[in-house]
Image (cartoon, rainbow, N blue to C red):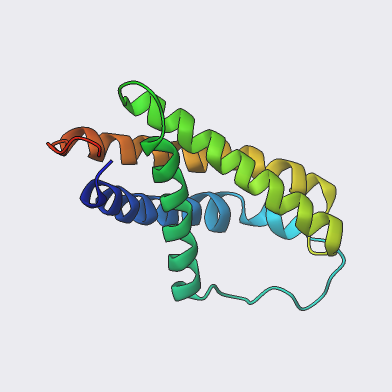
Length: 144
């Protein structure tokens, strides 16, 4: 995958992941997350730092793009969704269980549910990235 396609896919993916993440985690499931917090007090910022969330979304999208760029075969929207869902699940399964194992920020229910919600979050992001990549012309360069 050439740099232009990688960058466009990453930027579109970051915007998508940020927006979908806001809907899922800050709106639709906000009360679930609040009800399943751990015993730690004073850890909620009370509002997100936009720049930090933007950087996180860019890194997440770049990871999905890396996986999409290294797959075999042609890319479909369904394949993009599958890759995004798998990357999101594995990324957040790892992070959530490390957080659970080292802090009191979340209880076990929240720790298990969060990566399952990432199947949807990452899947939508991956599908949108695949859609955009399918609309872009492929690079005419052959690998060296």
